[in-house]
Image 1 (cartoon, rainbow, N blue to C red):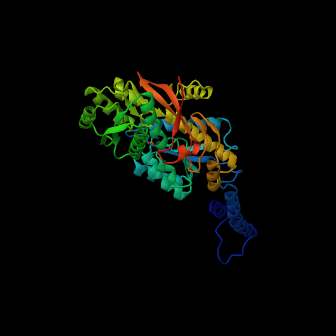
Image 2 (image 1 turned 120 degrees about the vertical axis):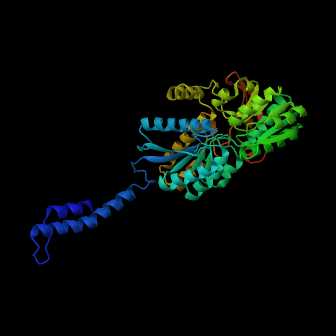
Image 3 (image 1 turned 90 degrees about the horizontal axis):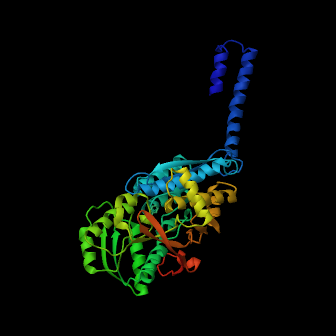
Amino acid sequence: MGNRSEVLRVYPVYKQNQPIHKPRRIAKVVLILACIVLPAIAVSCARQQQPGDIRDRSTIKIGYFGDLSGPTIDFGQSAKNGALMVAEEINQAGGINGRKIDIVIEDDQGSPELAATVVNKLTRQDKVIALIAGGASGSSLAAGPNAQSAKVPMISPSSTNPAVTQIGDYIFRACFIDAFQGEVMAKFSYYSLQAKTAAIMLDFNSPYSRDLTEFFELSFSKLGGRVISKQSYTQGDSDFKGQLSSISAAKPDVIYLPGYYGDIAVIAKQARQLGITQPLLGGDGWDAPELWQLAGDSINGSYISNHYSADDPSPAIQKFVHDYKLHWGNLTPDAHAALAYDAMRFLVEAIQRAGTTEVEKLRDALAQTKDFSGVTGIISMDSERNAVKPAVILKLQDGRYIYQETIHPEAPDSAAKASPSASPSKSRKK
Ligand code: PHE
């Protein structure tokens, strides 16, 4: 339309009975040609710039969503930092096949409902070609069906609940699953801490906490241990003394708390106030820099299962820790940062291998990820799009997560099944 109004402005308005002068005729021809040719050019450009086309020089849009506010803000922030760091590294090196990465960021506030809404926005409005789901399992479970129906590959760096990738063939993760994580802590309790009895206190509304409880209990019982008290709470509760008193009366050897760091800090403080001295045990939901500010000394002597240890002397991990600290104001990267870094890296690798961002080909390339060397270990996708990887046990002491041991899945595919019978084998101890 712009060209057309230009033409009308340059030439005097044509009066009906007036013969058409030559310049006007030329203008009309130009106008008609423009109307035919311009849309054709536009269509052909659009064709050339299909997102899947290797010749496309536009940016590659990747959506990130996570809890950038709310009670588990550290998770989303760490994962965002890890993902952004990859984008900057790739862009500085010239992009993917010459195309820069553009990360579109959304805050789901740790709310599963909001996570589902922002995924709709990212896929339908922003038209991202893939999603990094930086939040907890509850958010990934709620958002995953929208990614699946939009056919946009979604990678969760650290949502460990088995059901996340069962949503469909567009959903992947960069971490192990809770069937393995629960068993790892059961084995550590039974063999390394010599615990014969355990109490569990779970966050009843969290699929992560509920399933870890189940997997821990099944494994611990199989080994010969007994769960002698089970209590529950919901995220954000402030008084846990009733449940803790019951646990204390049962005198368990260890107390398993498969929850998120904000609640754990309050529970640990109240447990110590009640004179509970048994080791407190948790999972990757405890891994957040803020835990120490909130819990102080009360979590000293606790143990968690996790995805990696920033203390690991391996050159790849130490380089990542060094680069991350440089990038993010001396912050030590937690497991969520490291896993998001790996998730973005293997997404980039899959785009390169596929030679396209066309969704089906990208999905296939992601599913074929094999022996990808990540900061958190070697990543290969199993048939259910889970990464089969070892876990580490860390001891919490005076603001530090101190490496204890690594526990490997016994056979790659047995650990991948959402079955607590998969048996991990213990390895080296420092
Ligand atoms: N793995 C846990 C979960 O699936 C903890 C977690 C927290 C994961 C934050 C991702 C982000 O819920």
